[in-house]
Image 1 (cartoon, helix red, strand yellow):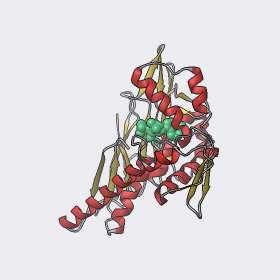
Image 2 (spheres, protein in one colour):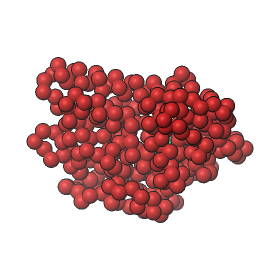
Image 3 (cartoon, helix red, strand yellow):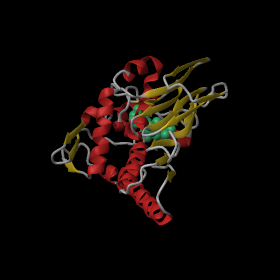
Length: 302
Ligand code: ADP
Ligand code: MG
């Protein structure tokens, strides 16, 4: 998934800790083999390769789980989050690497196989049908959070509950460290002008998405690696979105979704997600707007 994972947890002794760490990392590696779209042979790429054939493809429980969670989030975000953006993401990745702006025609073609409604699921048989030819599932916006949640689950099964999983900056937290009321987490809006908030948190997922470092510059405009599924174009407004949600999967996906939606649409979408907090910074031209529903900070610095 292109991210380094880090685990912090409290175990009764070091040999238990060793064993637990290798189980949790093993689980993350397993999920990477299934979900990575950088590996030709990954299960998700093999599934995408069969799009448009009319074939119902049997998949692993994990892949089915991620796809059905994604589809649900698509429905609840009006399609702002959509794992069928793969063909468009590929186009933008290539364009970013070689520094050119994709042709209108190429964007139009890629968009034809984008749409979460083209994913059909058969839960009892655990099968997936991808209706359109050229579809490519891309779980880059949810996989890290899912893997972090799974690592926490694996540790809990071993009786280890005080856990922090860091998936390249996105966190899933279990119970607090022993004797403490939470994990101290610093959240920042990413600008110098804005403050850093320190929160004490447990049993939540925290994720940040943003256009800050991966983008394509063309005629003075910056296009993000997060794309709007409706237009097939990288986001133009500069956003940085931090989400706190009941788990890492939802936090990861909503950070991407609300980046696409922006503040105005985001406010409407968030009503459908109880127990989710957001800190979104949006830049359009010279105008910077901030939307912050995070819990009152336990301390604040400027
Ligand atoms: P980051 O890579 O900064 O952690 P995200 O969690 O937002 O950011 O994930 C961005 C990735 O999600 C992209 O690289 C792409 O693979 C995928 N993606 C881009 N746009 C969307 C979208 N609208 N819906 C779902 N996934 C997306
Ligand atoms: Mg995300």
